[in-house]
Image (tube, rainbow, N blue to C red; front, side, top):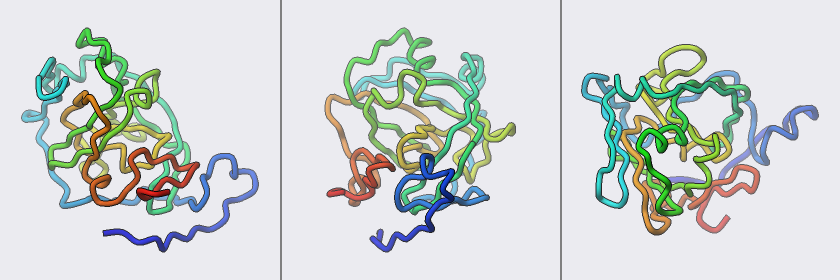
Length: 201
């Protein structure tokens, strides 16, 4: 499922503080997925916030897009060694999702769930405080299906497999539960600056 054959070109000296070890810059936006791209009709889209198995709040596409919107520009880093700088995202911060639900995080961990059955784990601390967003636009346009549209999680400071495509919910869990790639040998946290690609990194 994966190899350790990671190689990367050394970044330009003026970018060394923005390119993690083992990464190289790309001008495009590579498309990588665990399976086929699902095409989710926004009329059938919903986003559910859960505490354990219990749903506590659900939004339709129109309801979700009525929540406060935020834009930010961030660098992103894929575990397959590419990095893309100054990516522009627009969507709803996880902070605003929780505020709309009237929910204070009840646990320290989350699982992000997607329409294709994908999941990934992330500590709550890594999505609150403006760190995590449910993005619906990229580079000024609606998010394309190949890049996770109509909505994806974006957590720029972690390897990009943590930014679940085609997201349909967040679930609070009492422990740090492994998601799809974590069960297959990827790191439970995934810090690019510490090269946390695989389980024992």
